[in-house]
Length: 344
Image 1 (cartoon, helix red, strand yellow):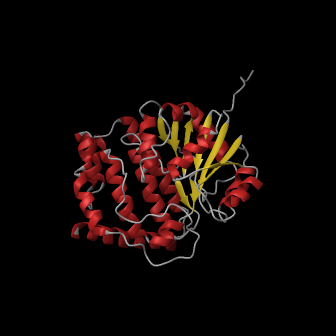
Image 2: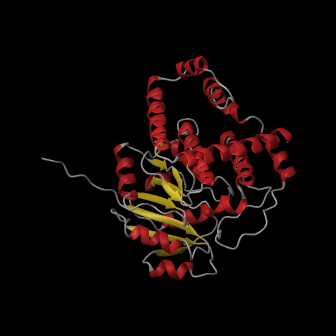
Image 3: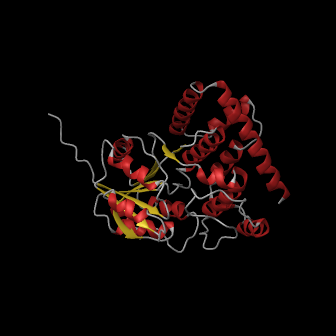
């Protein structure tokens, strides 16, 4: 006799601002899921388009939102379910995404989880950028949990115990949120299907300029320093507006703040720092790889082998011309990024 399996209830929370173009697509895809959410809450941050009306017409509950952290908190306050799934308005979950994600979440005994990312716009540069992000999320999940806000699943009781998102943090509030949650519950990156997400921010601002902004955020996150003031312009929504000239980054203020942070790796153990440093080496021999692998525990080796095998399998299925374009785009991006860092 097969024991009954209780499926946890789920609320989807979507912070939104002027998302009349993207939001209806997501709401339709949620309604078509093989496991539909029990409740969908849209936290509207004062949209001047038809965002609120379209959400209500689709059957979503609409509450007043604000900045991303405040909007997610407002949506979560309306939740009474076992789980909360925070999504951005520009994601496009496959039909069985929620069913697979909830099943994995329960099977692995997780309390909070982030998702991998896949680009909706399949330009090779976008594919490359997402692969880099996914690798980093998986490498860091045991050291300093990261979960971009486009996809975070959490038990409601954990959300309430940590007091939700810190609304005083203006950037990287999502990473700070899951790191606090991971202190009292189990965090992991979901292994299932990545969440297709629009690359509209990259397409609007450019990969290199955006990389600097994310580097700024990342150094704060790893060093444990909340970002409560931003030295550059950073849009939180409405990326479907007509593209304009590149945003002025404010590099001088940016560099000053990078210098004030200091070395973020002082927060890590000597062994972890050494491994991460070697992973970033420009050249490494076969003997060097073998020495590096000896520093990992057996279960870490199994995990790395599984990851590399899955990535290699995906790569073999891609047309050679796509792989060549990805490699060239990645080399140019890395060369430009490191050159700018050296000059700073």
